[in-house]
Length: 193
Image (cartoon, rainbow, N blue to C red):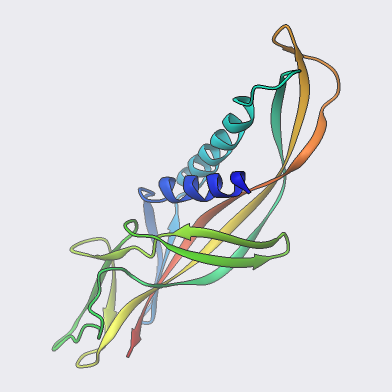
């Protein structure tokens, strides 16, 4: 259970400053993809913290650990909720206008269900900003900016083998499965209230 909360914390920390690039824009939705570099960096950081936890365990005999990637699955267009810091009753644009959005800020807890199982994690819905990704809103109607995200779950298997005089010896033994959970795409849309 402890490793589960460590991964949630790691996920929350590393996705507060991820850069994104807009890919698709329509009148109804803006789709923003997280760069492959940022996705890889976030996954590597989650893995490092996970392995550091095991490598810091003082046990006899001592072990070295490794993770092997098994596969990945993606939960698509998961509703995260309204972007943060919006008026309770929404925003009314008296003339043509819309929202600028940036990722990061407060986080919400969500659950996703994929073939690997059900996962809980913390993720930011982002917030309206003075610059960033833009989406237009209807005129004279109360509305809010709502966020959905694709979340990729990568499955790993953890293995260990004994260390003798600081050198790994013997066969690798399976310990458990581990998962990283990473947003790979953001969907911005405007919802009328």
